Image (tube, rainbow, N blue to C red; front, side):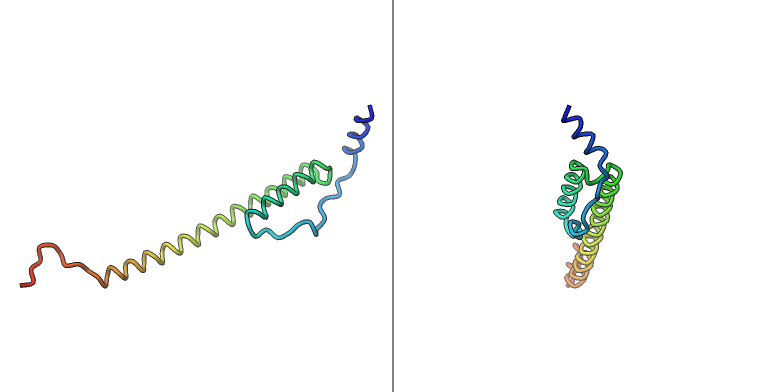
Length: 103
């Protein structure tokens, strides 16, 4: 019976949310993992409601998608530069065509 009373007290307690000092900037995927862990612990301890946790998780997912797009664009830019460099090198070192006589 005491357990039900405790569970009821936890369920009726108003979530206090996260302390802003707990929420660090997301700069790496490791930061996202830590944020998700923080969200999980906050839900399990009653500091966040499900809806709040879902919103926080969606924000993490958006960060991952955005960062993925940034990395993709960086890689594409690097590959374009490499292709242009190779084209320039090939333009300087054209091999003679097969069957062409110079004599």
